[in-house]
Length: 313
Ligand code: DON
Image (cartoon, rainbow, N blue to C red; front, side, top):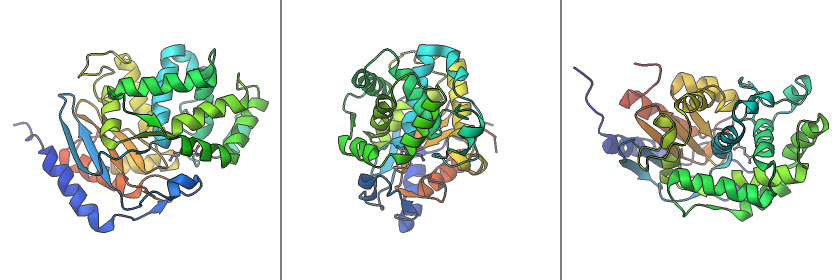
């Protein structure tokens, strides 16, 4: 007999209630000042299924800064434009280093390990920028995210984008280093303009889960019918999210949650249960490696109770 379908609304409500006594746990990112001012007790979980049902609990209608989760969307765009040529310029291996580390870049001649560490995402921003002005590229990314979420009401938080620029020493260092190796084709200022703006996209958990639904449905948006990417590409995006989506916490996330996922320092995580659902969680407090502490725990509970781990069990 197949296992009973989980009651997803009851499940997300119970996870919310169980974690509620610990809302505020973890450390909110403060190196981008506007992120430090977000209420650390916020918590959201949203689950969207290929059938079009949404189950949510907590602050699921409040926009937050998606930060590095946006790297999934820019990579999808770059793959659409360049195909496998993307992999000439960026690797596909976990880095085992923090998201903003520069150490590997020197050994590897400015070719980033994967598209989700900052150096890799900056390279991807350079690809999306090619042939465009920064303003056009930023507009294209935002339009793409709105298309994926089927929601025009998604915007860039300009204050966050400005603050990223003002406090972006490490990203400038990474970009200049790669430029020095001849790895970027556009001026550093333009590339980082694109990068900072896509990190500053604000979305609700509901919108973020909806935008990731194509990854749970073989590359097709099951609700609009739009073919976003080929099934093989969706599969590979999921593989990269599993192996690289949480930086030096990727192994731990795979071990505990067992789903492809991408985190951001705003406290959001987009996770994919292939064939079942796209899930977004938000809790601003981060763990020691910069991934949402309670967000990861919420996903661990959900994956275990719904039986969604891609590893079975
Ligand atoms: O470039 C940065 O540092 C931020 N805009 C994004 C970093 C991030 O979200 C890392 N994820 N956990």
